[in-house]
Image (cartoon, rainbow, N blue to C red; front, side):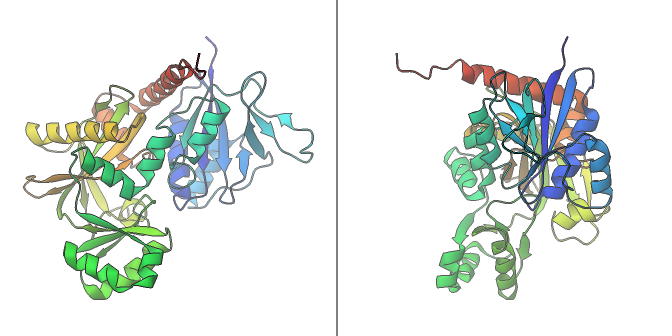
Length: 376
């Protein structure tokens, strides 16, 4: 049986660039070389695409040194090709491009967290090129990245979310008092977060009015719109979803923030080894565990997602109230990431999880390719 040519795209123009490298290292290390011919494609912070021939070594070095992608000797572009879609070398003579991935790509696994990768931009490129890809489509990716729109859709679908208000930078500059008015209305403490960012980047927990302005400045550095959210202090859970039309939910896991961190921040996730602990699976009675799994599937369907998602939850200590915090359409696959760990305890180890995600990508592509594009 011939191997599938899988383009794994990582890096990207995002504040989550380094997390993408960690995820890509985990995924490519777990891919069965007997089944897959992996084509590693890195996107540098400047947006240039490169083909890496010794990607695992490069990624190990980058992760160990907490650095970003180094440019490779083989800059490439993704273009339609008469014999199938291919990576085209854009080297010293762009007038005479050379096929860099002969035979084309059978499927792409985007491992891009955040803007310009998880937000529908790369998904749109792959749609135009006619290449199957892992994960949500253009609409699901875009909505999944936009926290404001995501929460509005979830609320409309009857999925509980915490109280929140969006705030645009232009409106704040015109009337700085509006932020304090929103915070007073929601009640302190509140969370200030960029509208389209992940990995808790740019998020601040604000306990009083004096902390509001610096938190707003921090969030607005990452996005022109932010959310002010009411806090739900109690317990945090995560649940993994897998599938297309008939998604399944994993066993839930619980995150406990430790070591003096105020919430599950970027520092507690990635910089402090003792910043958080995990119960995988969570120690929950049958009813709340069932509710979290059902809410995960409901959120997945409400946002028209495909392939995979991780759904994060906030709950009161007594579990009387459980809210969807947010949905991540390209969840982390790092050594500490909950998405693969939850599927592992649910009976699906990482190599088989990758197989299933690729199967779902090919299945979705076949379904879409069968649709008519003419009016006859």
